[in-house]
Image 1 (cartoon, rainbow, N blue to C red):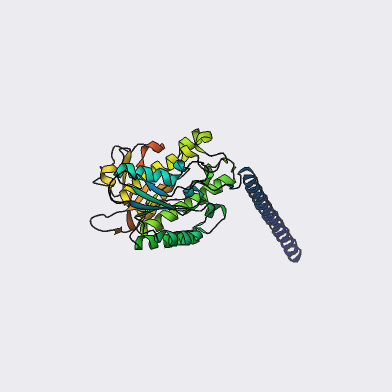
Image 2 (image 1 turned 90 degrees about the vertical axis):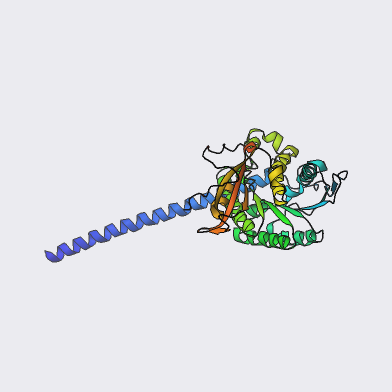
Length: 350
């Protein structure tokens, strides 16, 4: 009886183990099937987006030249580097390109001529910045504006690699004496031809790259401005006006919003921020650079720059960074408890 009971008990244990293994196998198969189906959906959506978004055809208009030549004084030399968003793809008139808009605004604000050189290339990824920087350095620039990152996301360039190429360019420009302002990777999840779930992944990848760009650029002595979801609700509310015909690149009005976000930071980088910063700018206090980068990636139009707290550039969590956000991009008002611009609060670090 004892032997028979042992046999029966062993058989039952074996049957239970078999059922568990079978269920586990079915579960694994279901997971594999779900993963395969999801991958298939993503590839299908990527193909559909490529079919929907036209390939680049004619190059954007050249915008090189001197702006505000009527003004006295020596010219400020500005270079524009990066991809199609820096080159101004999507518009047909030179005055609508971001380079021309920035040069015009800078010239009018400072009442000085601005000499502009554009080296941005349609389709460029961060790895291509090296050649643009080498050409830009021959112009002995006072300030460089870089817009890069979107093509790194669509080409799935590892963020660490893309950031390494970017920071190498920033350091080379800073070593030459130029100030550097970087418009970080835009949120590709805002592009309408990209559908969920690919849109959600594109948004996550974009924000991760933008945050990494912010940390690296500010650490290298540059300034950043988050472009976020192509600068917020106006693009969502008026896509026909803010996007070009391809529904991917900004239109002339769209680039005007981009330039409006970048111009105050370019002025600040050149040392004219205090008297020329628009009234809409709101001080957001001081945070550790990694936390500031995360906040900026979620809020379009946010400027991040290095700063000091009690005479020190670094704290327990690393380098200090100053955040500034501008109300005309739909950003919520600063809480009443926020300090004045000349007495930034140091928020708790976690």
